[in-house]
Length: 200
Image 1 (cartoon, rainbow, N blue to C red):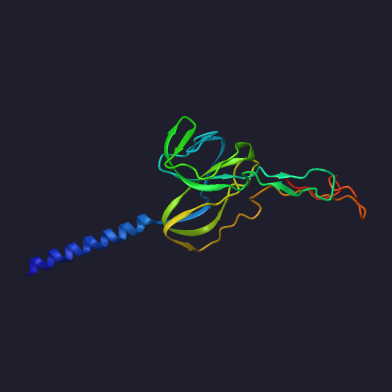
Image 2 (cartoon, helix red, strand yellow):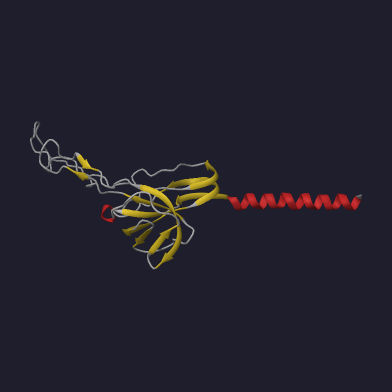
């Protein structure tokens, strides 16, 4: 009876040790920039050609997203700045890398949307956690005109916020401030007498 009790205690000890180890392996403290970004130069129905493979590996979850590409009215009229066509601007979806050949990554399934590389398409590596704890501010690589400006993470179980996700000022470039003078009822809509912003 005593031997059976000892064996039972040993099994219980091993069981709880494994549970503790599993918890430690699943828990992940995160902060700072957790994504990797690369520009996309070409897109097919199930692949993307990137400017550099960098840290991307087979099995990685990724976000493909087009940052720009909308068309606006540029004439010097009251309609200046009006969006006339979105094109593929704003299209995005998640995918999984199934293979890599050179600078071309192939996805495990076909993409649902279409993308125009000239509209600043980027591939973002998405870290996948089981239990993530944000212990310091999570932010993005600042948008540099080609990549960045996005935070994307996934947790299969939980995300605990002990700090914030903050991408303030990390997106599209801010406009240059105009400090000169302009008159009321100025008929010029497309001149320089205004605050400037990055063309979308």
